[in-house]
Structure formats: C-alpha cells, structure tokens
Length: 428
Picture (cartoon, rainbow, N blue to C red):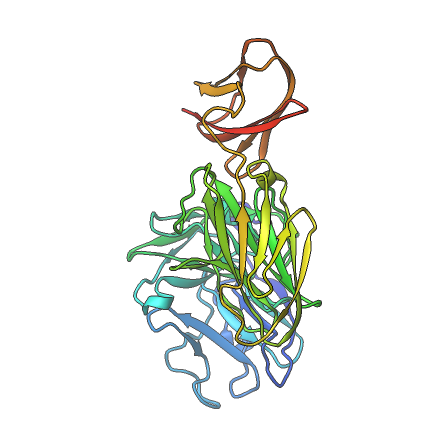
C-alpha cells in the first residue's frame, strides 16, 4: 500500500498479478480490476482479437460489455483509458503480471451511480479503488439510498464475497487495484472515495474474521463459500440496507450457499434479536451431483441469545443439533428440493427484564441491576456483536454501574455461574 501525503510529481509503476482461466469451461480466472494511476490505456491490458476478455458493466441494460464486439474490432462504446474509480472484469488465457504506469491518483473521486436497468439488475454499479493503497469500506461516504453492502469477486473461489459490517471482506478492506459492486436504490446517488479512506493494509483476496455473525459454509471437499446469519435488535425480517447483503453468483462450479425469503437471496442475513423463534431457509447451488458438507462456526454470540440451533434436512427428514465446528454431510443431486434445508433458532428470551427475579435497565449511561445477590460476570455487546465491556461484579440488592458507552442499543449478559441471561438495553 502506497499512501501519498501532500502532492507528488512523476510517474509510478504498480503491478497486479492475475491468474489464468482454464478450458474448456473457462469459469475461473475472472478478476475485478481498477487503475491506481491517471490516463492508463486499456490497450496495455487487452490485446484486441486475442483470447483474453476485458469487460465493463452496463447497469442500464444489465449486460457485461466486451471491449471487442466480435473479433478484432474495438467496441465503439468502450473508453480508451481506465476511468478513475470505475471497475472492470478481466480474464486472461495465461498467467499475467500487468503494470499500471502513470501519475498516481491522489484526489477525491465522486462516483455518480446509475439506476435505470431492468428489475433484476437495477442499481448495481461496478466501481474501483482509485488509489495505490487499500481503502476501508466503512469510511467511504455514501448518499442516503446507497446500501451498506459491498461485493468483491474472489478469483480464488470463483464467487462473490460480501461485507456489511461483517462478512468475508476482513474489516471491510478493499485492496489496491480492486473493483467492487455496490447497489443504489434510487436515482441521483453518489459514492465518494476520499484520500482519508485510504489505509495501509496487507490484506489480500480474502479471509474471514467475524464476531457476531454465525458462519455457514458449504464445501465440495476442495472449495467452499459462506453464508452469514446475524441477530440484531435493529434488524427486521425484511431486507435491511445497513445490515443485509444480497447474494451475487459467480461463474465457477464451486457450490454456492445463500439464505432466502420470498423476495431476496442473502449472503448476509440479519434478523431481529427478539423473543420469537426464527427459521432461516438455506439454498445451495451445485454444478454437479455428488457429496457436499456444511460447516458451522462463530456460534458463541448466537448461543447467548438462543438455547438451540438446529439444521433440518427435509430430503432425509434429519434434524442436527448445531454447535461450534459441527459438520453435516449430504448428497446433492440435480432437481433437489429448493426448500431442502432450514436453520431453526430456539429462544432463551431476550426481554426488557431478565427471566428470573433479576431486573436490568439503563438510565442515561448507568446500568441498573437489582434482584441479584452474589457474584456475576457482566458482559456488554454492541449490535455488531463486539464485546465492549467485561467485568466481574458483586450485587447485593440494587447496584448502578457506569457504562461510558455511546448512544445506541446493547445486549447485556449476566452469568451467575448457574444461570446465563441476556437482555437488551438502550442508551439514550
């Protein structure tokens, strides 16, 4: 990562290593690409009439536009140079190390987003990191109708990976020269990438690190893709632009997993953390008949909310208790029931007061506990599932504990040794 402070003159060379595709299917080897320098000629990255591919995404039509329309002819609608802040899709017959050469981009980029296409693809825009360093998604400015989800094409698995406050993009880091998909739900929206959004990061393409999101992986024994399920007091049962992420499907034969309801397929599915039990329908797309497996991880936070998590396989009438590290092996065949798998979450009872005689509530920035006599471990989590407070307390009668936390919704967990209870509090 190269971050330039102030101004700079002269040119830089920045290289990007790109794996190749394999025949006959050529379903792998696809990469999202963007330029970290100004006025980079596309011709240096695409030999017209050759076996390679260089595409841009056209939101109004919902099509990938090839630079070569048919044979050795440049598509007249295609630009000559990389547009700063725009992403492109490329694939190469041979392993390539491509070089960007020119004046480094060192200024704010304001992207005007398109919203005009057919219903299924309406509002999807392919943008690109304009800098020679990584950028952090959570720092980027979005106008009001731009979703909090971002999607990167991960060439190592041949599928999209997602982030919305958590997910497979570790920390929301978008590397240099990386394109990414965003979604706007209205006309006239912008996404602004500022110099202050740059970060020094060695993050590659990609691994996962999450706290509050339960991870469900599907594998064919060689590669896997992930679904994330999160419970959040601010989420709803519908699609939430600041908590959920759509499932975008890549080109490869890797098995693909998603949650779904009547309206949406999810790669990140956030649901309300309430006293109501939940069911989550799980879909799996496989290219071949064969043996597959589910794996489950990151259950600690969800286990503090629900006393049971079960997987239902309707094809085999099997119910499996899900714990950290549980695996479930199954055979998938063409024409499998779309409604084959469901996750069932039981209830411990997230109440405004604890189920026992204990009472917990917040007033200002003070936490008030009564009805507990003796020692307990106090844990406080924010709505992202991050533990923001851990303290051993001794309560006799009623006690007030300073929180020193920002305004928002929190989950308070009390562990007396014999009983663990969780409640929601709101700090105003």
